[in-house]
Length: 345
Ligand code: DOR
Ligand code: ZN
Image: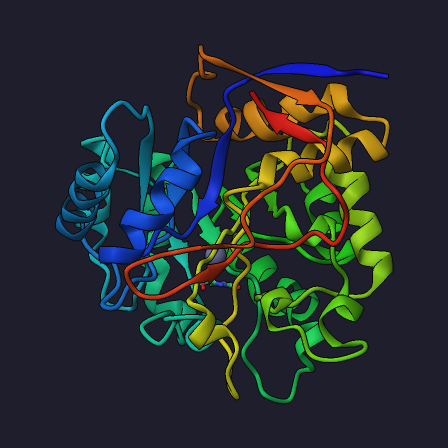
């Protein structure tokens, strides 16, 4: 049995770092293992303009502990008022790596997102011209659509029409949770990729709802039934370069999670690599972990691979703190529900 595994340093293609005291507390948890991360813009207020992204990047770099090597790749939050020229300028300056589309009301801090997709057509066309990827939170918000169907319906109602209307637009379907989304990516091999989170490889909807509500497993898109989780594991471990890691590590304080109306998000930054090694080992695909975590995403984003390497070793159970302290209160670390044996050394 493999006892040690060396990979190029991984990148996280979907990460929530927040701001202020929370940023300071969670940033080292990602920077310890990841070389780069695509940082989500859903702050309050959101990161909409190039100037917003520059200021946020400066705050992240100021919060990075001395000696840690980590590059935040910034995103802009797409609104119906977004100026295509500002987006193009931010891209040209190397400031932003993607634009994020939140359908208004789909998730945390998405109120400023898009209601009328025609209103953002000019921005999308400009992005297609310059090759700037659109990262999509792919869920409809129609209250008539069951929450477990919102991703599949989004593909038919929104994503496919939007891609047909904007040829050449490069799209990442973020945090896919369904076999439907995987099939859509596989069927369209140009300008399309998908991120898969760590937690969606581990939990299905029973983990959230059976035997009591477990708010720390609640995220959006919500975990689906077991058949979908198994399909995600097949895709992640397949070696298909269109699938890559975006943890969607999304810290919220325990007070906000353990509430009558709890926030969506799983905080997986501290133990993601240990969990992934466990999953890939179970699937007999440890040799494909480097593609998923370190190579496929950077290829889609047209960036060089990281030169540095990390080594994971297998041994006695790894103890990961159940919570981390932040200036805003404790944040619970995602519990995969099984013992972890792989540690980053
Ligand atoms: O679970 C989630 N948490 N899904 C999202 O789309 C947003 C994220 C957050 O920002 O907390
Ligand atoms: Zn997210």
